[in-house]
Length: 135
Image (cartoon, rainbow, N blue to C red; front, side):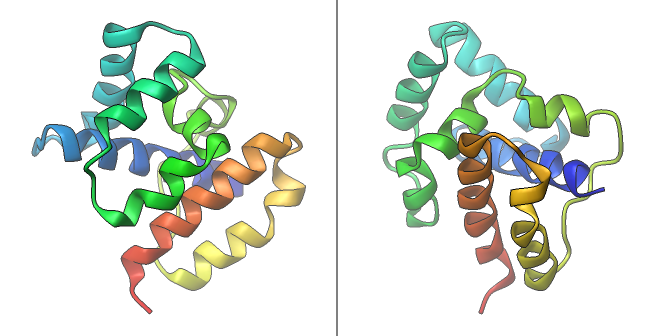
């Protein structure tokens, strides 16, 4: 279940980035548009996608400051199809309704993800998304 929630959180932040660049009421397709935008603009190489994404998001709200600085988070956000997305695609798309639920997911990252870059990236993404719930 937690892997499904991680995949959904990744989808939400990718949609946020795309909606920042080109607001669209069809939110469900925004994360796909984000990944397609990077593919069209710079291709499939991860570092090129990350560099381009940072350029695109340079004037974005301060909410994204830390996640944009995180190489691990940006790798996950910019990959066309991450292993987290592949795993989560097998199930539903809900990640959390409260800050406490996000904290529980974050506390389990060490057991859910073996790759340290993925763990760091998802931790940074969940920190960013937790701001939606206020203090």
